[in-house]
Length: 188
Image (tube, rainbow, N blue to C red; front, top):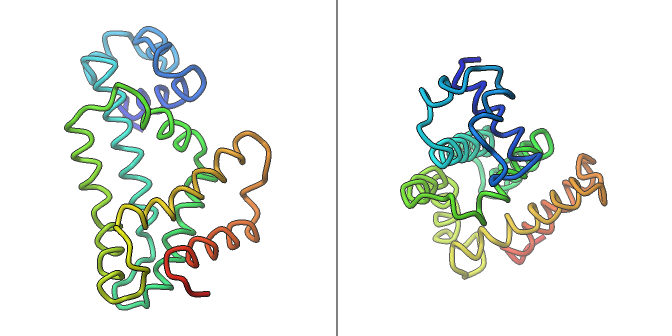
């Protein structure tokens, strides 16, 4: 792991535990076991660090979601593969989920980060657009379709992190995937 990765990992740990507002470069340096000056070599502000960490997490998430995707496979197969991958990512990396949840509602989000975020998500939106064109999905806005898939996933992860449900159970994951499929396609 590079020093930059070590700093990003330490930032994720601190933000998840204490939130954005309590993150300082001094605390970050202590957690990463580097000098404060080293943190500034890689990130000249807390805001830039947080934005870069967000983009890294979203890129890692999208890469995992797309794992196993094959254009020639039926949409339904790709749908279940991708949603299963998303669930796996969040269950394995709950800190990443918590970070994204905090970040999405924070004033730290740079306009450039928003634009890059949309580029990272483009393969997922392209798949939804294509499925819609092929009449695989209900006639609805692409963003609404994504919300009907991602919304239940985030709700389950919040309950999982709070200890209200064990979302690591395959049967529950399968049930969520089936529910999302039926909500966007109208089919079993």
